Figure 1: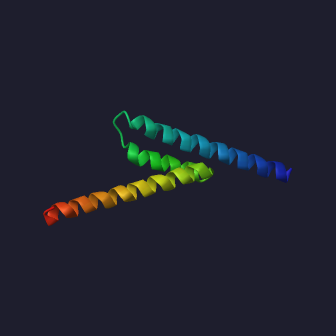
Figure 2: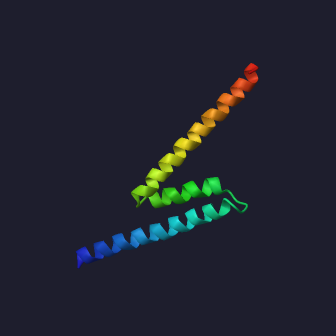
Figure 3: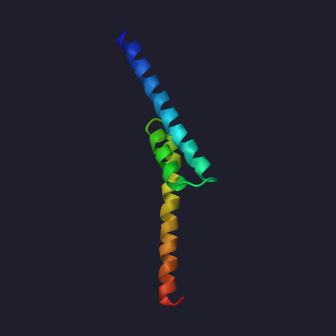
Length: 85
């Protein structure tokens, strides 16, 4: 019985994380075309899904890299602007 309970807990946890993270991710995607903080909500949804799913961790890592690259590019442009370029 203990093994059955353990399997049931794991399945229930996976479903709860999937539903919660999926809902938040879907709300973020909807916010891409409606007013709202989509660029904040989408990574939060992926982070929740990443607790249980490897594909969500990979997507979150890619988004983090793109955001970091974008910030670096913006800083470089701003610095060039002030240097007289």
